[in-house]
Length: 601
Image 1 (cartoon, rainbow, N blue to C red):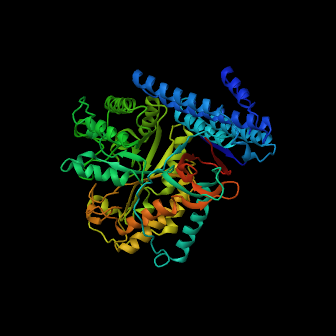
Image 2 (cartoon, rainbow, N blue to C red):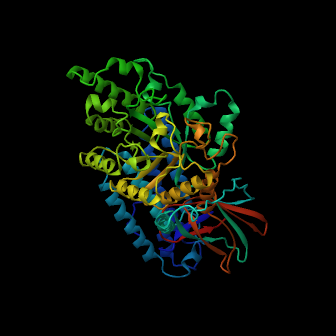
Image 3 (cartoon, rainbow, N blue to C red):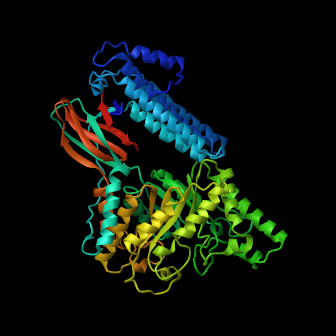
């Protein structure tokens, strides 16, 4: 068993079921006197509360299912998980006592929990009553904070674990390419990242002077890739290869085209979700979370083969000057589209890009006919269809589309602020990450020697952050500059700016494998046509697998403790005990206090 506790050792009182209260009291009469009884009770109470809050967040997701059977299955799983977690908190705390070191930990634990409770109350007050996504996020954060105040039990298991076989990367030479102003921006981001993306931990093994390996096996940060499963029809082995390179590095799968309006309803009233269902099944089998792109997009051929507007819709409303009746009909069709699709996947698709490029002069179809208010309505309809889904406003910013105009970061920020002021339920802003001359996106040959200055982009990102929402970096492609070493430096610098920004919560690689998607002739992929890392791919993988993924080989001190700085995510720690190999699994959640991880039988 592992107990996780915080050195900022918590609390508001929580009404526990009678049976749990009995278990707590019984567990404290185990004869161990290293730490006072009240300290162990306080830690155990925090553990139980954390399990309770985690179960509530889990049950909140179950509320989203429109299929009663799926909802019931979800509730059973959440309840079972909560019961297991709460029961684990009632186990013997003998091995937890050394963390307190004989000191009076209860006041610190109670203070920690009181602070967590106050922050949770503020978080809940900021949520709209209909925004289940916001409430669930507050509950999850509360559970993580309670966990850090007390401890979290987990199993100590005999045997060793095979660690992920991840490719080695190769960092870029930023000094040889970026100027002093750009390097200063990257250095500042690196300094912020140390506190943003990880926390210190102490692993208590109970085995002094023992060699221990601690390896991060999954990032908590959302890295993602897209999927259009039709691109794999000609050679099924390609899909297995794609999963094999994508899943070890990413945890989010974006349904790239299957849920666009044109693909779900090619004929009016004839819905087909076969493609989306196939992609979702593949994603779930590999353990991906799923994000959908996109509910409302005014693009049309020849600008994009995966157009957001079906032909029958454009044929039915060819003119921008609609009568009141026509406008009402179009609005009704849009509402039906959103409600049907979002409710169908409620509970299975957690993130929706509700709109795409609504400020872009190249994609004005819906705005031209119904005005900007249709965007506000689209978000409201999506929220009603699945109150627990995260809703994203996706847009490009002209600061990274060299040579083409369009909305800049100020325009996007101000539009989102207006929507929020009007009560529109926007949860995150998506910023397209196509670092390429803009004309590339309409099939024009361009000069790829152009590039976005890193310091200029960092300023634009800060402007976008003025909306106060989490930022999703979507559709990331690095097409420029063309020279491989320069492109690698550009990609690594921009990635480090993202990693060091407090509002960036997601990065989606749009061409993780080069043959997939349009414009593959520009060698956009992290992996090239032959399945090998490109030069800028090496730089990106060096960040994901080395710079930002924690792996430590060390030796415990006289207390059996090893200390390290750990990036948020899932871990396995391994060492050899008297009877052979042992390992433990644990999760390092977001927080700023030292996390004590205590391995016990």
